[in-house]
Amino acid sequence: MKYIDKNEEDVVLAKRLRDGEAFPFSCHDGLSCFTECCRNLNLFLYPYDVLRLKNRLEISSERFLQDYVDMVMREGNYFPDLLLRMADDDRTCPFLNKSGCIVYEDRPDTCRTFPLEQGIMFNGPKGKSTDIYFFKPPDFCLGQHEARQWTTESWSEDQGAVTYHKMTARWSEVKAMFQSDPWGLEGPSGPKGKMSLMATYNMDSFHDFVFQSTFLKRYKVKREILKRISADEEALLRFGFEWLKFFLWGMKSQYLKLRR
Image (cartoon, rainbow, N blue to C red; front, side, top):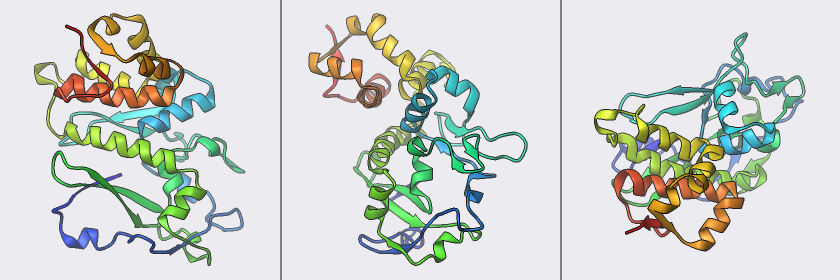
């Protein structure tokens, strides 16, 4: 995911795919490079990715984070990035076997988007974001020489990526706010940081936090929203994004408000 300011040099934006612009691509096991893109890579995981994968594997969020994730804090950010932990032997995706991806139906957003790279362009600090895409297959990828043509819209539909893109875009707007420090002296490892990580990447614990702690004594949440987030983890994740903006930056929310 690229974060792009509207004022960036035109040379960056000039390389993006325009609306309706076509690109050639096809991936299949008849290509000698099949699954090479699943090796020796840094694969960033977004909150919706983790939600889908932990459910696919039928394990808890906590177990998934412990067994499959590395967390890194990049310079200039105050919230960790999560990367899929590669197998130790040859840095291969842990979900790859001889036949291909064993979690294909629930594969991460980045995998669905390939050979495109998704970017988010922000129109100023508080402006709306816009999705943009770059056609950037690696040199070894033979799929870029196949005849079939796609647009960003048709590729997204074909790969089942529409919901993934929407959820990643929602998260990117929150993540961009962490370019400034919201933690104060306690730092990102303090109580606020731990709760923020829970609200984005650990839906099991966040569900318990909302419904089994004093959360609802402190926050007023509409009944229909409570009903939805109690049964739907995707809705709970969207609620988590909204709560973070309210909790850390005091932004007004249609989802909740403090009780008086």
